Image (cartoon, rainbow, N blue to C red; front, side, top):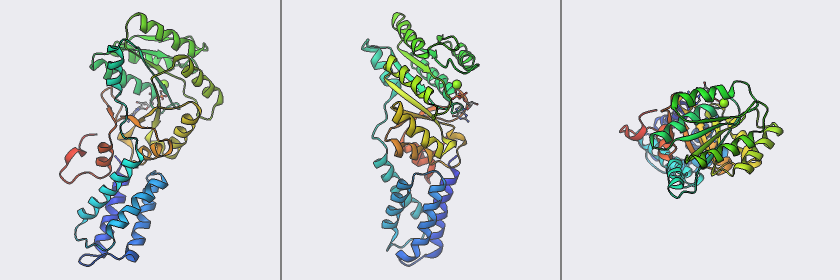
Amino acid sequence: MFSRLRKAISGLADAVVERVKTRELKEEELEPILEEFLLNLLESDVAYDVAQRVVDRVRERLVGRRVERKAQVEEIVRRSLREVLEEVFPPSPPDVVDEVIRTCKEGSGPYVIVFMGVNGTGKTTSIAKLAHLLQKKGVTPVIVAADTFRAGAQEQLETHARRLGVPIIKAKYGSDPASVAFDAIAFARRRNYCAVIVDTAGRMHTDSSLIEELRKIVRVTEPHLRILVVDSLTGNDAVEQASTFSEKVGVDGFFLTKTDADAKGGTAISVVAATGKPIVFIGTGQGYEDIRPFTLDWLVDKIIPREDGGQGGGK
Ligand SMILES: Nc1nc2c(ncn2[C@@H]2O[C@H](COP(=O)(O)OP(=O)(O)O)[C@@H](O)[C@H]2O)c(=O)[nH]1
Ligand SMILES: [Mg+2]
């Protein structure tokens, strides 16, 4: 994955090394190469401001230097990218599993998580993954099928719930999703369940009745965490969705799905740059195990694999 960003960086390194082997790099000869690099970053869905800052730093570090090996250039890009991302990304995304467990121990639960997102982004699948992850840590969540709009939505969630062995609360089609979610929280409290995960209707982010419905769910359930699911394959549209939901409903963090199939890789950077909110989880496949907490190291290693193989392996 992220092959396109990797290619952009490798292309930059090749161009630099080819042009100057034993003498110092001059700014004029570097400029067209950096221009091309900037365009490649943009084509990989990296936000403009972030791409420009990476390029500026790479320029500062390359001008006046001797570069003999491709790896030297890649190291410079890695360092520049990492620095810019450290500035752009919030310092530490919440550790959801830890927070759920802590809330539970304090007896102030259940910990309520509302999932939002456009249809097809991977909401239902991601909820099943998170439920499975929590179960592995000894916490069984209650799942709420609050998508009372689309036929079939509840059945899909129910199938997951049955396979995983977690309770599910459903509503009739056409009923008020906020009241279902509210009842589910009361149920969880009575039965001492530590977490409640709410699946909501998808539709389009431009649909004003959906936005109203989500605002009401959030008002009524007062969630600890509002997660927006975004599909990394949708690039610019993902950024658009992230901005709209953040502004109109409020988002605490993202679940970035389908990173296993993403050839470009810039969406992760761009949704964070657009909203200032963290990516909490990433989806790396279609199975229940294909979930991991997001870290900056993971992202940087995906974009520029370490020479020693380091942390870059895996999905
Ligand atoms: N490759 C891959 N597919 C995913 C991932 N997450 C979800 N999907 C697939 O995306 C499709 C839509 O998922 P679904 O959960 O139904 O989306 P929803 O409409 O937002 O609830 C399904 O085929 C999922 O298997 C992921 O991380 N990687
Ligand atoms: Mg769904």
